[in-house]
Amino acid sequence: MPDPFEDVDAASPEMIEIIAAALETRAEDSSMLPVLDAYLDALKVPDGGQIVDIGSGTGGIARRIADRFPACSILGVEPSTALTNKAKELAGNRPNLTFSIGNGANLALDAACADVVILHTVLSHVPDPKPLVAEATRILQPGGTLVICDADFSKAMMGVVPGDPLGSCADAFVDGSVTDAWIVGKLKPLVKDFGLTVKDFNILNRVITSGMGALVWVRMSSTRLVSSGVIGQPLADALEAEYLRRAEAGLLYGFLPFVTLIAIKPEISLESVID
Ligand SMILES: C[S@@+](CC[C@H](N)C(=O)[O-])C[C@H]1O[C@@H](n2cnc3c(N)ncnc32)[C@H](O)[C@@H]1O
Image (cartoon, rainbow, N blue to C red; front, side, top):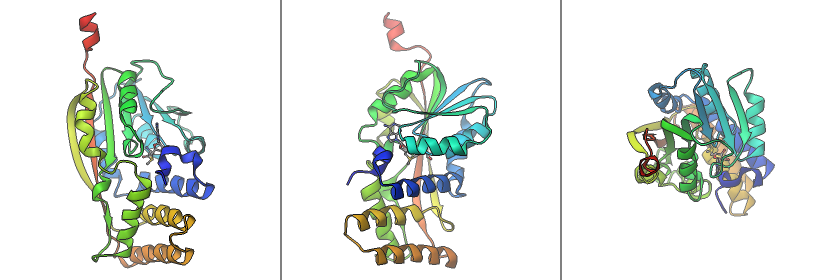
């Protein structure tokens, strides 16, 4: 079964709700915010600047960006109608934040329209990242900044003993809900192939020891395995109950490294030199 993030609208209504809730939980999770804020702190965007968040989901990241850069315009572009509708509902009264439906591989945006383009946990969920990086590069103005933040899902784990049942949930999540668990190691040559210069490559660990931040690993994997008949609902219920028990008992331990690559589009493109 393919990664549901590749085409969220094709998922069941139950799965879309799980995805939307998980994205919202993660965007505010205290274990996630340092990852996000580390690259937002590093960004210098002029007043009146344009920031484009490709694959904006329910807009949780875009809302934080909008609040951090009130003098800039933030556009979230997202292929899922269901998630975009939620993003618009949740945007609140933010005059500098808009959302539109679109595919990151083929954006209805002018070349060189953006000061900053952000791909936040998107490339690990697409079959081919190149068209998205190509489009991000096209819409960046010369000197503009591309931020790619993604999880190293190849190292995702949860549990406190070998063979931990919650560890199986983390494995099953990566197996069924991530397209390329190894994408972060390929990011540097990926952006260099589009003429961008890597300015920073930073790794921060997300360690989940409380709250609902990793419940999505249990919910998405068990929903998929119940619907395909591999496990029964009683086991799915028990796994979720065990997650909640561990969170209550302080025994939760989820681990996921996040890589952030920051790259710059050169001021003078090769084409203009040749022309
Ligand atoms: C894990 S979610 C991340 C959402 C959001 N960036 C966040 O961090 O809250 C991955 C997102 O990528 C979107 N996506 C999948 N394929 C895409 C594509 N070709 N272009 C743009 N977004 C895409 C999905 O619809 C989903 O919203």
